[in-house]
Length: 65
Image (cartoon, rainbow, N blue to C red; front, side, top):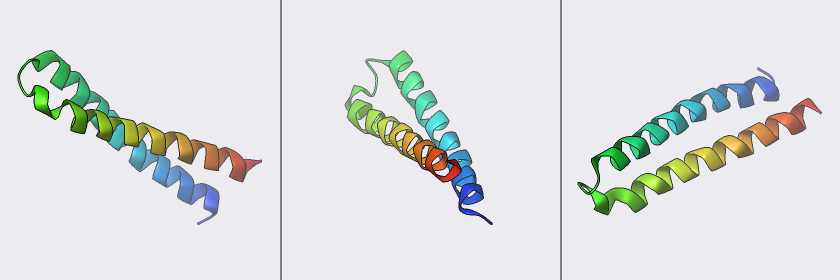
């Protein structure tokens, strides 16, 4: 498996995690003010997921160049 293939597989995995985090954040927003205490944690998970996804996409671009 090449570096590019490895990165693509990781992008797929992190993309699913990011999508789940996005949906969790959306669900939380619809339930407010219930569980308002979880906003920082749920938002951090979403932020970190998308940050990782962006970094992987940049790594793939570098690998492809």
